[in-house]
Length: 214
Ligand SMILES: Nc1ncnc2c1ncn2[C@@H]1O[C@H](COP(=O)(O)OP(=O)(O)O)[C@@H](O)[C@H]1O
Ligand SMILES: [Mg+2]
Image 1 (cartoon, rainbow, N blue to C red):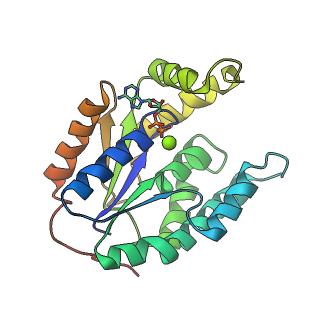
Image 2 (image 1 turned 90 degrees about the vertical axis):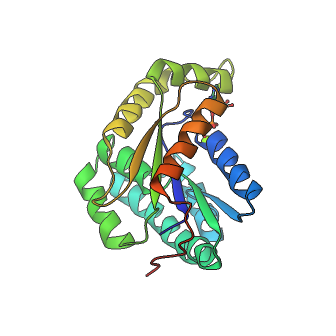
């Protein structure tokens, strides 16, 4: 789906920062931009988010993954497809590559199973471009440490951060997906310039509207 870009990568890699910057850049060129986050951005999605964040509910990797897909389908129908049909841009703070990584490669479901779910459930309703922001693990940990402040139960998450950062490096999405790995080291401006270079080289900023919406 043209004009639909997903920002991916582990916690702390700069997704929200760069999504905001690209949104501002697009708006400065007169484009309309809709930003979404997963799970959430619809009433059902926010309820599902509450369930997913409740650690007291026993949940298998499959049950968890399908909740993400439920939220995602609602988001597509309620927000993303209508926005693309209006000619707006849609920027997503995570999309299915995160499910492939967290529940698939680094989780219990396995990459193949999550990819099957993606293809069966989403079909061709996919971003035109996935930007995976990549940072060395020590830099990620340092940024998260700064963000979390002292006293956070952060150390226990170190192993998980390392695992997911590595999983994002190997995740190439579904057949036909454009997954571009962005070096996220350097200033915000440096990273934003790399992202613009990719977007311009892939010509996703052309005049084409929604090419499919199922
Ligand atoms: N290029 C950068 N250099 C240094 N710090 C950054 C950079 N980009 C983002 N940050 C900081 O790193 C932290 C994580 O960034 P954020 O955009 O929230 O990442 P994410 O949304 O991927 O978790 C934030 O505190 C943010 O201000
Ligand atoms: Mg964020």
